[in-house]
Length: 296
Image (cartoon, rainbow, N blue to C red):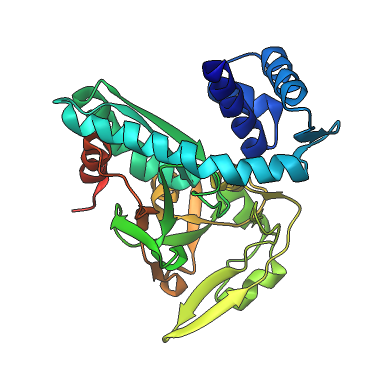
């Protein structure tokens, strides 16, 4: 009976935290129908409704929220203690979940991870693309990746990339129809490909620097994306100017597919950092991963 209650409570925590039966079922590795049946049985056994279900969302009731706040921290502590047992193992093992922007995953993390995965076959890495600024504690990630200027002060951080900058680029076909911009202000008369932040929903204002002074230009165009690689693809296809990380633009500039402009106005920004809460992460697997990603 106690064992069944524990399993059912774990199922409840997954749904309450994910706010979705679909995501919760995938997380704990059971079918949605089995998960729904488990929650119904738990509610029946307790004699109280724990979750409010609609066609579009799932949320805890007052009783469900009370149960979530009451038992959640205890299950989290159990998980921490189980993870700590990995220190007694000779070989690092376990699963590490990280959320990071698309560019950081492709150009910073993944190139370093390939050797790490070969060296530590018992460690599993889950990389979740997140171009927003999600709360890694609330979303139950082990770590996140952000640029230095976006780090929260209460987080431990490890630098994993050098400083980098963006490049304004356009295709040869675009510039055959339009003049080269000579200053950032000229961009307002060009068709540009916008980037929309997933979290705030706002469009990115292109950032430049002139003699130590910051310049922000709001551009306009026909298309906008929330994925930086889609922005790059649209520029290559000739749909306007794009402002993308220099590293992903350089191969296309070298091949002649893209032309770079306004280079002297593009500032360098603080690089990417792996960050995590200071409550745990002393496991051999996490320490090994941190060292593998650390910028040297």
